[in-house]
Length: 238
Image (cartoon, rainbow, N blue to C red; front, side):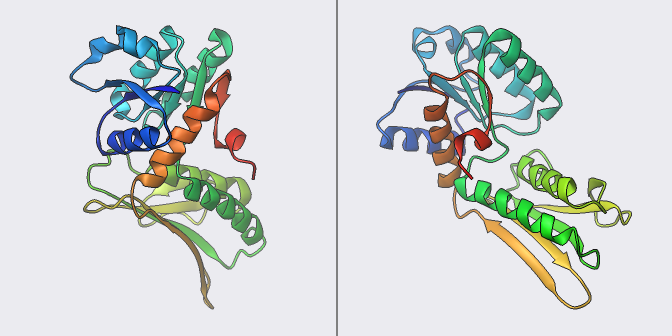
């Protein structure tokens, strides 16, 4: 499969290694220094573009791919105010877009566990729910896209919580997210339910970027021959 990479930071390099190890061909790498390569024959030959760049450039990169009819696997977070625009383009323009707030298979299993636990804990109001997330100091968005997904899944299943808030204190109806940015941490997310008697917690701790890279390449393989707005729900059967 011919894959183009948009963004060539640490995760982009890891995706390149993973793609090559799975016998794919990386035909084009576009970073901040060579935007003109969107019109290169190499980029135009791609069967999918995997995009991990910056929030401020993400939507423009997606639009360039759509203009060239190249399916997009989007890993950048922090641009979700324009998500509905992307969905509309997929619907009206017959484009292909795969979005995940986190491409790690382990994290997506964690998402499923989080939803299941939240459904159970809805019946136990004595437990206060909260979240802590830790990422490397280079991460621009806070809370992370993964943290927001976890929070929104909790809000859908726990009636006593009405909104999430990144803060140390809030109203009883607020789901509080404590975000930290430290060193080179790939990503830690912990959900905890605390009562006077005990604490129940679930946690995902990324050991490296390899899990994110593998998930992104699997998504590129998945979009081949497909149209529309796609997510991990379509790719994973759980």
